[in-house]
Length: 429
Image (tube, rainbow, N blue to C red; front, top):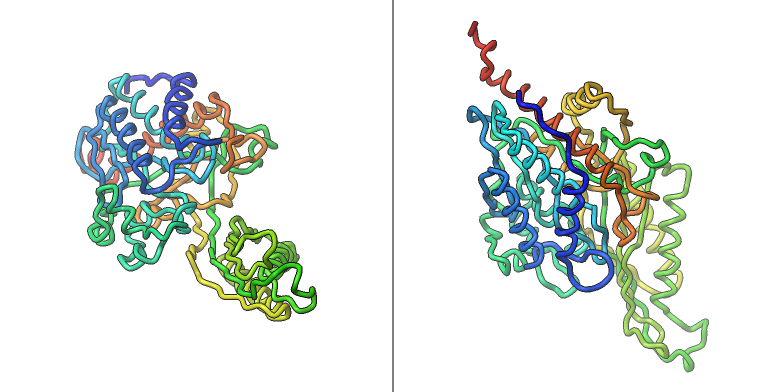
């Protein structure tokens, strides 16, 4: 096989910066799911992939799929990540893995390498749950895990449904809900992503290989009290919705810190207070709860315990708590054999690595329901993510990209052998 040169850190950095610049005004990167800005980012990804010799398609869910033909047709090894962001997020979350896919395609194209079977490079739509409360919208649809009704239920802060948002950017939600990817079209998938934690940085390693992805239970909670004048209402006669919500937030933290819930993470990341006046006691507070764990039973038990204790605290304060489930995803153990191909590629290259767990959700978590999947992590400085300070060194991203390319070639060779494409398979001499 023709030698492929190493990934170019400067080119990777330039590509990543170009993509990160496609953002709403303000600090960091804001490129929300199923917006015209996200679709523009997908169009740019498609341009780069077409220039690297790939055939471009957009599936009904809005996922952009670039296919690089092989010597023969058959199941493809794939890679990719997402291009949308949270509000005021960083330059690397999702973008790093998608730009690594662009670099892999460019390197293979420049070297004139012909794989045995096709390779596919994917930019997933709507991975972040920032807009609709549901993570991995595009990959869930691709894996056949979302119903049409769910697309109407998921709504953003302005009341726009996921279905309407998809239609507004030219996608058909009806078709998306009934058009999953075909499992037989794929042999394996590897997603490169920034760690979003500090394990690799502390270990002074450039590569992590993920064995398990945490699950997440997301709930919208509303505390209803009685709005009233701050001066005219005695302290002991109040039904202060914000005071009830404040105690509820601390209860979530208290449960997650309890030794019985070791490994559980509970977060309130959004809170809205009405009527929002300095001189009016809050009458209604709506806030989010995100409970994550590597143990699916403990995750849901923790979420249930938190809501039960919140409700009791609010009742004691003369307020009422209502809870609405936004999303519920179990932890996923990624298959050993795909991870072994990644670690074997690392061993061949003499690259040290660490096997670790992901606390964040990823498209790989959904795609794994359809095609065996692995994940490669590269370091996040100080473990920061979902903030403008998010940072990964270009050399570290290049190291991850080199391993990604090597892993894809191993998956391609394995799939070709299984399919009987190689000359030494099927009785050929």
